[in-house]
Length: 96
Length: 486
Image (cartoon, rainbow over all chains, first blue to last red; front, side, top):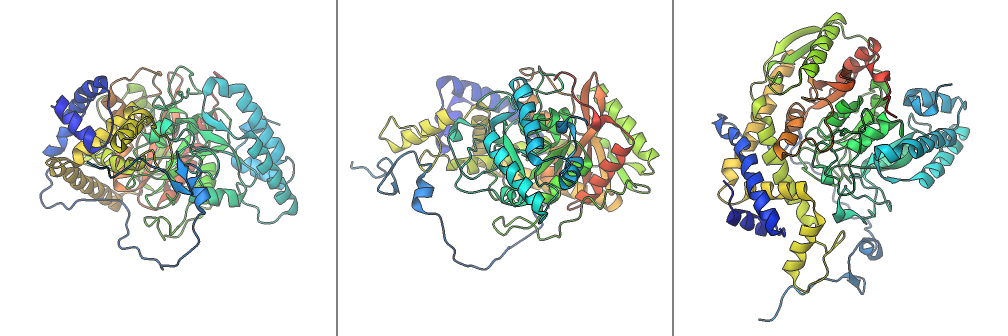
């Protein structure tokens, strides 16, 4: 059972703002989904290694060759805010 | 002559090269068709009509000069709005990327543009490819051309509807748990998910990176072969893309499946599958037998864990991938605060829709301290068991056959419970977990609605499943049917 506190904690980990209504709804929806997913615990996985991806490759290497990148103007074209050819963001470190 | 929009890619390509039609004419026919039916279907987030005509004129020049002609030169194609197109909006069906114009082309777009395709538009989808109906698009739902009150499936519903309605000759979508095969099934198309690593994911906006794969929608196996060959191949910008040589998929369409060993997974006859779907699939299994295939039952014992494993793994990867949407570098940004954390949370609260939020929450929960082993690690181990099921099955069989979806197209608004929607992908998810290839092909109709037949092949055996699909088309006419409602 996913209670309101758990929803809020998880949302905080994901830095996802939620309305009060969404907190209630997600609590019951996630609980219902996890109930279905619980079937996973029945599977006998003793000695079974995990599969992280379905690619049949491991340790893919390539030459490290430097190449031209994008101009700042191109990368900033989608930026919500910018100043002097840089991304403009809210203060990260603040005085106490 | 039949309407130009009804031609197959193979037929149109021949007429183009023989200069009996021009790409401009062919493109205009599709733009006219879009004008006529798109208001009802709503398959596109953006129709790129000016670009299409410009590309068509280029294609006609190329054809006139006769050099470097490719099977897709001058052919009108639609692209799912999750594939980056340089300087052309790529929204992923999300408010978050509503105004986003990528500074680069996806690897598949580089290949397609080099081949000289005509892009008619970007297609609607469930937000960030999460959903099975396109109802989770932040903009509007797409309607199924076979019954406009019904969903086309998803998440690549716009790409499917565009081809089913004759607004594009072929299209591309992405399939993470069934997002090509399920809408293919619901819209009477050939919808193919390639083997993981067959197609570069560079420039495909990430949902679940260990599962995502780009693939084609077509109205025939032959066209699907052309569309797949155009995008397949190694790309060093995607470290999971494979070096295995790309096959000549068209050359493999011999029509001969005599002696082919086809397995029927016993666990795919599950409760909840509509009787009309079961009947169509059983009839078609007999058809394959009549074509000379050796049909036997096969067991994939861990099938019942597929949906559960997927709904841990895919949301876990999504929660990580979607952390990039922070309102700083690109995309929607909440600006009414000077507090960094509040801006971040509000950006994500306002920018994401309900299904995306649900999956971010589910994935974050599954990865959080105390639950990681019980959920994520467990799901990864179950994934191994499912992969091994297929490895064993493909020691004995060339192809596996099953329903593609448990139901025919459902009404828009009919499925409101999230988990019920997740079950749409019960037959398609295992192939993504195992990384093998699969295709849904037109298998017939139940109450006038299309039923898809799923063919699963071992890794890099796209040629084999396409051969079966093509052989099946030679003795059936389902794939040639057009929706009557348009």
